[in-house]
Image (cartoon, rainbow, N blue to C red):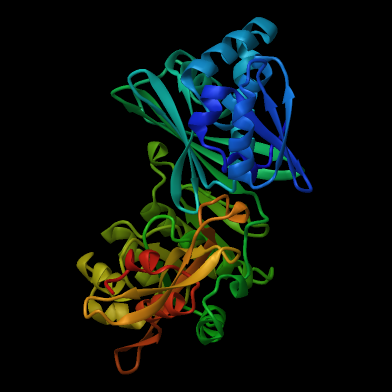
Length: 452
């Protein structure tokens, strides 16, 4: 049974676990619940109060309610019973096959970017990263966690017996006629192996430049720079700020079948038709610097380097740019100017940076306020002046999180080769302040990225 997650998020987890009751559907002004055989009817008034609707209860066997609670809330005691029962019914292998498949499906349904499975002393915790925030999904017993990890290793073509080394793998997953690439990573911790599964929608998530939210002020000159030969275009920002998505949008714009495009990535995150894509494999000696060097012998017009990490890669990229190749890449820096300084620290002479870099984009993915429950509020600053702000209280539309999604906010710094100057087309701080004043993001969210 698939339950609307908006119903699940209203009722407290503790109440569900203690009383064996779970909402399953809604029709008009009525919420339908499944409850255990011994559910106390006096709690019906409480359910009506928190949902503000009529309540219809259907009593079923406790085991059926426990399965649903385990699926949507997680609980060590209940999950032990569920695993034991399903092992008896299906056999242990089938149990773990179903569990992992349903977990991945739930991650996709919840629009999660990552699934974390973390072992601790007595149980393993499963968390999903949604809109950049990790939220607990459920907990499972340690003995069942071992079976789950083994199933993930099998799907990822990893060594099942190896538990002391880092391992990485890949799973191709089909769900509702859509293909997903799942990147799996395992690290050994003091309590056991921690697994992270990154969820990537194959092909369909590759955006156009107009979808990136750079704005016309940036998009128009950026398109001209992409079409002109030679130079470096850099995208900077922290992990999870959409840098790879932005680079692929640029490749999508360039990919017309008339030029030779090669990407060097660790790993290749999206498959782009008509583009030559190279996976970094350090165990085989395939790294960014030697891959870039070899790629230059392949008559490339455009080279996308997933990340400039070291001095050698930086210098090769600059040489490629000043000899007529367009190079797209990323750096982990806080702002556009920091990327210029970082490359200089890597040993690239400043005059070569002025000759090679076209534009540096710095960006952040910022949580937006839910448009359905957003409201104006009035606050006082330190000088006791009253000013207007916005907040979201939470509603069924946003699963009571107050989050409507995420928006990309950025700045663009253009390098002028002739007079060796830098010009900002847009400013990140100004974009954040404007988004706060318009009620797109909350003041608290904005303060994560600047001091107000």
